[in-house]
Length: 482
Ligand SMILES: Cc1cc2nc3c(=O)[nH]c(=O)nc-3n(C[C@H](O)[C@H](O)[C@H](O)COP(=O)(O)OP(=O)(O)OC[C@H]3O[C@@H](n4cnc5c(N)ncnc54)[C@H](O)[C@@H]3O)c2cc1C
Image 1 (cartoon, rainbow, N blue to C red):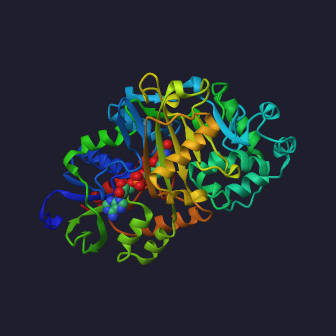
Image 2 (image 1 turned 180 degrees about the horizontal axis):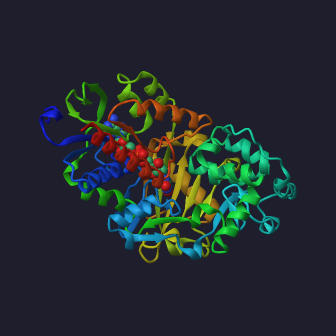
């Protein structure tokens, strides 16, 4: 085991903790920056498990490609697309299949299309709302009143539930915003901070006095290109032809010997001018700088001895658990022609899944001819009790929901359950203030950076951006030290 102090060797040494997409992106950027500046830098990525990529994991079996965690990323935030391109994966980038690009939501046990032009919580146009079966006449009237509701101007953090109810009424919250927007975060809308998660809607209220007017302005600015796509969630996403797992797999292949899996960090401590990193089992190593890209609760326990207040704030970021159930069906077992690749399930419907999708209708290359790949998202803050089910009971619950909602009674050819315990950081009201303080305290610690889904965005592009920024910060600090 490496025990010499970094001062004894010429190369500076950086340890990155956590081999999710954030840690991989940070490690890759560190190596790129060091090469560009012709710096001698030894980078080691330490990952607790045997699996690299965290929530990005593709299983390829019998001609199917199953995503057991994340299945796509937002195209309009450029970091994931750009990283894929830099890794030589540009030709692998695939959009959602246009012919099935429709967002459905469950209403009274049936799938109903989200009206055209509806973006997560509000419509750009009223026409499609008036024709929709999704809202009652009173609910539609309440939506029509949105441009006349005075804007809140005090600038404080607000929950999704409060914002949507105040501007568009309770029906929009229950029927669309909770399952679409809250579903992404598997969160309780009464606690989820809209300011931390969807600031563009808060900005629309501030700037245009109305979310609907703001969306119309965005639509005008974009031209009519998005016309025809309902619910922003599906139409703006990209994946990779060989599975999203190709992204961490390619990063890991390029980083090669830099990575050490099955290496769990217990604590990190400043010793003079360098860091001592302690492992489970008692061994330790030293480094000039550390990037911590592990979840906030893990960072909290590592940092306890370094900065108690920082550790406490990190520990206050709570996490939800979820599971993904992938199913392989025969196409002929579906009773009717499939129209849409996905649906979300409002909590008021009292069902057993958060969302369902037909992965092979969503993206090409997900199932062999004659078969359909399907998946369901289970658990989250509002249905955490589902996590107590055995794999067999979870599969049975998902089959029951696909039977009721999509009409498939046949048994799947096979099913894969993947659990993600404590995997989804909850951006509750107060998150922004907490993260600002965390960042202030972390900035006071020499040669140290924090990054990951817990802070300024849970999406894959946000995590990549955070990892890259942490790498840049470390390189700048190490350069200044010389
Ligand atoms: C089921 C699911 C579906 C999702 N779907 C999407 C989607 O479709 N699109 C999208 O953009 N986002 C999606 N997300 C969110 C996104 O995938 C995650 O926010 C992102 O992958 C988190 O990356 P990360 O590297 O910050 O954290 P993680 O992936 O959690 O990685 C942290 C790593 O640190 C390691 N670690 C922990 N403790 C230690 C320790 N003590 N020592 C060493 N290593 C340690 C862990 O083992 C882990 O590998 C989804 C998330 C989940 C869970």
